[in-house]
Length: 145
Image (tube, rainbow, N blue to C red):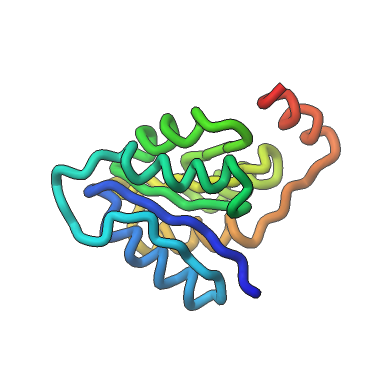
């Protein structure tokens, strides 16, 4: 069985979300599209960030992906949930370090600041990078302490 990954966006991230869902399928993952299903300029990021963060927080899935204009709104929403470590990544290197050192379980992409191609590169790096553990485990454990 392939890994399920929840994906959500607001209006600014809608187009990138569509590409992310397709790419996750292509890579053999099972994306769960938390919405929106159609582009609506009135969409609010908490409405789509919340279900993704809840799924990760409750352990329904191990990881989630969110996107909005700057990535900040989605990260604010997601990081309010226990056991969620949402990281805004605008380069593959940031995504790699977020996984290696912080065990980021939600990737947040700033759709107004990365191209679709860059977004795919960032997604790949985040998916392919494991948590390093070691000295970082103690630090990550303190987040929910």
